[in-house]
Length: 245
Image (tube, rainbow, N blue to C red; front, top):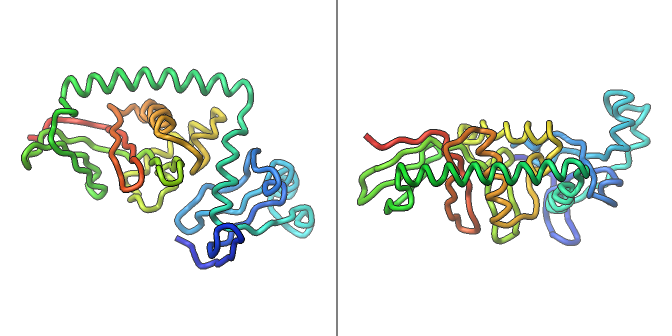
């Protein structure tokens, strides 16, 4: 991960530098135009719709339009806080579609969770363990595996910062267990649902269950399992499940 661009923030102290246009700095509650984060570029340069109009005229930033773009350097923590505010930029008609999506996926997940527990008795097993390298979640009793599920990491809730972080933007998670969840982001792009496309935003456990339910529907997962972490919860989709043999 690129962390070799130091910046001293008046609020957050020593951090990494990130770059956004002055319009986003003044009003982050609007659509952001930027690449998705990558391990090499976790805080990609971002600009607003007004700046993007100028960008599209040339297809790039060059000597004809770069005078229009006024860049502001901020720290990576401010970048994430500002970007998180953009989830409020959602069209009125889309708000209703989002609410309906949440409701439908919640009901579907509840049904699937009940079927899973009824068939595999997940809540009755003494122990669970997950392994990112194998992509497996194992339920066991007295050291004997009972149920095994393939998993895809959906995202995590931090109770320290009260934020949701999508696994496709969490580079501490191995690529093999966060490759499929990109489908949720792509669905969010198509439908205009910023909570599926903004990497990190203010959230609580209920929000975590809501977006996990939507992700489970998109992935056609068998269910969702939530495990505690040191500072929150990790949500994973159970994509296939069976009794251990």
